[in-house]
Image 1 (spheres, one colour):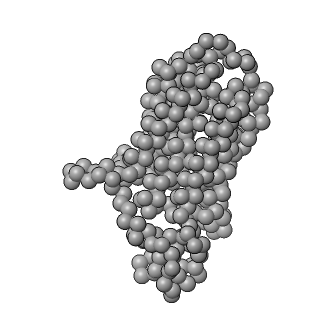
Image 2 (tube, helix red, strand yellow):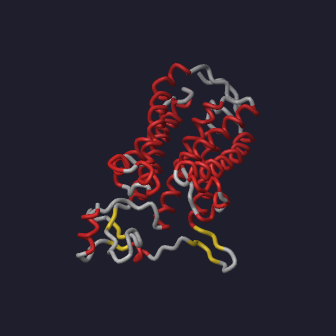
Image 3 (cartoon, rainbow, N blue to C red):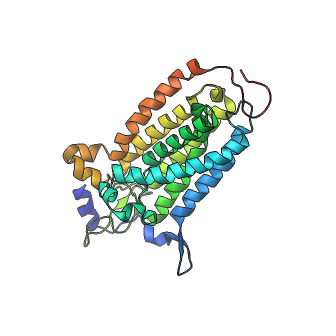
Length: 298
């Protein structure tokens, strides 16, 4: 990697420079108050996901009614925010756990894996309180998650963060301030866009087909299993093109940290768990008595 950086410093990069895109982290600046694109990405992902969830539960065999979906959004949003922030502190920045910095959400730092765990806990608590099937609710909500992933990764790109490894591919981008002062920034993989395409668009397409063109929604755990497996494989693959997390490199050290990233370590349980849920889903299929609607669905 050092050789690539040195080589980049001696040549003029023919690649697109991120600064030429004239992107800003701030979507609206009122002087006394700023709205950042990352915040808009979270809000848009939740709103669009909620809208799509309503489309899903309107189909036969839904495990919940409209009134449940409205309440579920609150539990899911709380899980995303609390789980995402606490997960970031646990997995990437433990020092935040003993400082007030953990409450500074506007400074960034959210973990998808933490948000997923927080959301899952919220769903289970919600389902138990409403006496609903928590696994089937996971199935339906999983179909809406790719919206948030897509908008979140696009926001990462707009922020010029979480960039990829140095590369000479034609679509590589020169992001500013990625190396030590005095060294020319090398062109890098726009790994944020890779993730937006795989975790957002491709994963949504897979879940859309499974829900609307197969009987997957009548096999508890299959849709959320496809989500876990698909996300895990997508994230594990893209991490090979993404710059490793500095905190994990310091903790692991040596060859291991430069080969396997924290994001990949955290996706391994997702891949295993997702594969298990998909392979065993048919055995959990029973006659579905919908919460909303009329007739039961075989």
